[in-house]
Length: 370
Ligand SMILES: *[C@@H]1O[C@H](CO)[C@@H](O)[C@H](O)[C@H]1NC(C)=O
Ligand SMILES: *[C@@H]1O[C@H](CO)[C@@H](O)[C@H](O)[C@H]1NC(C)=O
Ligand SMILES: *[C@@H]1O[C@H](CO)[C@@H](O)[C@H](O)[C@H]1NC(C)=O
Ligand SMILES: *[C@@H]1O[C@H](CO)[C@@H](O)[C@H](O)[C@H]1NC(C)=O
Ligand SMILES: *[C@@H]1O[C@H](CO)[C@@H](O)[C@H](O)[C@H]1NC(C)=O
Ligand SMILES: *[C@@H]1O[C@H](CO)[C@@H](O)[C@H](O)[C@H]1NC(C)=O
Ligand SMILES: *[C@@H]1O[C@H](CO)[C@@H](O)[C@H](O)[C@H]1NC(C)=O
Ligand SMILES: *[C@@H]1O[C@H](CO)[C@@H](O)[C@H](O)[C@H]1NC(C)=O
Ligand SMILES: *[C@@H]1O[C@H](CO)[C@@H](O)[C@H](O)[C@H]1NC(C)=O
Ligand SMILES: *[C@@H]1O[C@H](CO)[C@@H](O)[C@H](O)[C@H]1NC(C)=O
Image 1 (cartoon, protein in one colour):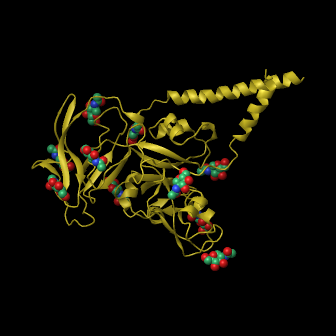
Image 2 (cartoon, protein in one colour):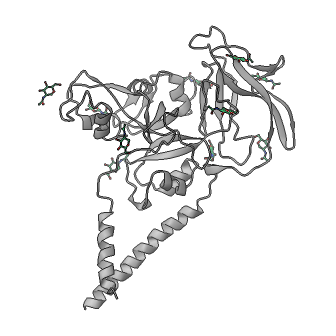
């Protein structure tokens, strides 16, 4: 029989190896559907005072309203809006899956400043969203030597992202920078997912190893929509509590309560924006189900259903809408939208038990040697 103290020493040794002193792992979000593209989101924070305009420029956000919508800021917010040190801004960007992982699709591009090092660019300018080695890999022809970069060169910055569904549901993947004093349960609750889902998609075995500044793949619940796969904006992912301008700015779609058990609340709501169109349209094409029923209008409601004029997509020529009848009585939310965190609690309890066991073994070990 193996003596208890030997077991104890072995367990204690493995525990020491896994205490949170090692450097954080590089973020590689799983992205299974080769070449799939979608919109994704990342946190950004700076130790300096900055503006939304500077952030938009740094990340190559072309459409300023996208940045406002992702942060649910009022649409009249100006681009000189001041961002204070350590304030967290969510930045939207296009994502593409390649070889099992997701990276920002040819964005952002960063011009190397005099005095920059690759690790400064990764850790400070881009808030530690990636490791300097990942920047080097993304620019391997331009940067054969990570210690020798040239001021004035423009390099591609690979932001982590994914287009995968989670638990069968569409989600928007969000690269979240973990804050001091948080934990998996708090993050899961705040963003409408479960601890179990976070641990599983991030490949985290021990939730206690989470460190401040670590980049987590957080799948945000999005509103359901009837947008077709032939539409330019498919898949139209709009996370809970945000809005998005689509169809060349002619429509404003908002998501009030994704993941809610009320089918009516969790539906994406699109209406005419009243803005001038961007790109090649001179005026917004009409978006009506009939002469008097505009996009977003409800034609009838009863106790358990609602019929309304819903957005189903746009092309270079027009905006399409159809009358949709929807069940508004509570239905069980599908996939990861729910708020069940029972499973995760038992995992945390598990790790507490392990610690207790180890403690007992240590005591036994000392008693044995007395
Ligand atoms: C933005 O619009 C709101 C009303 O919707 C108004 O109260 C606010 O003052 C406006 N802010 C700016 C900066 O114009
Ligand atoms: C794809 O990923 C595998 C490991 O996950 C790696 O060995 C291979 O080199 C990668 N291929 C390309 C083209 O990057
Ligand atoms: C903040 O400003 C200092 C001094 O100008 C600079 O060295 C540093 O790189 C800036 N940090 C960021 C995140 O831009
Ligand atoms: C750095 O790279 C440049 C070319 O990009 C080269 O001329 C120079 O010798 C390199 N410096 C060192 C120290 O390797
Ligand atoms: C988090 O804590 C570390 C040290 O534990 C500190 O250096 C850092 O400034 C803190 N960050 C914030 C945002 O409070
Ligand atoms: C969606 O956001 C609303 C407030 O914006 C919040 O009350 C609700 O809990 C959120 N839903 C989920 C599933 O996180
Ligand atoms: C698009 O959706 C239709 C059903 O609405 C489906 O039959 C078709 O396979 C889909 N196409 C793609 C490329 O996903
Ligand atoms: C239809 O929608 C428009 C704009 O979205 C709104 O101004 C109008 O009041 C709505 N009409 C009805 C009958 O709800
Ligand atoms: C919109 O344009 C597409 C082709 O670009 C066409 O197939 C479709 O029938 C049009 N829809 C409407 C409502 O005009
Ligand atoms: C669902 O939400 C709609 C709109 O907010 C509301 O009219 C309806 O009563 C709600 N239904 C239930 C069952 O809560």
